[in-house]
Length: 337
Image (cartoon, rainbow, N blue to C red; front, top):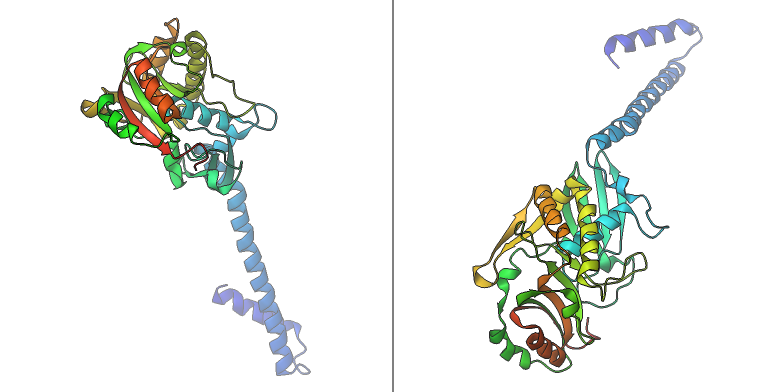
């Protein structure tokens, strides 16, 4: 309150008082009461202004920034939503051994959101749904995604194929492992094969890279099955997996902004001469992959991620003609975590 307004208020108060009978203390009390009333009105005005900002400005900011809450609406009953479906498709295409069980989004105001993916660490066995150990957390701030917790689980190493070595150089080391070991590894075959040629009862086929000639996008399809809202792909032939793969690509292409935020993976060659990286503006490249695979009769693959016990895996390497291998995880037994 400025000095002029205060003087005017005090003069009005003085005019209202009986000058002869009012003592100094009574005058002081009335002045203090008036000042407190003015202070309360000022504070209430400030709070009303702040509330107005929250109610008006925050939603307006949300309109002009990417809003992941829009993808949280249910798709299948109460167990799935558009964001979970999208992230699951992304993991299927680019992230071997990774699965997204569900998502949560919290609005923190002014275009800022907290996005949590329920995503267990690869190859750890069973995990408790919605437990903190499964959480992969991002902060989405004005359309940009910032990692907060365990976000490495939602990223594939860009040099994965570069780390592959010739199978004959790795076999001596594998034979030294205990027979109880459960080995997860990525294999490169000498020639492309249809998925049904690679199934074995004692071997788990987790992921396969789809052969395509359009470009070097490292895109594939997950065969892991983990919940009732997902199609069971285990045992599907190449023609069936083609349709599943195209459906995943359609989901990814439905949200270019989200696809760009997480990028796509490319690889050129296998072994020490391979080169890889992340392309941050990937829509056109993924469209080319889709068109190429859509023209094929069935999915074929040369690169697969599998797991099995030591002796079963050694036999499998010979049967399928694996010429390169990269060991991803080794568990001492199926009970290891």
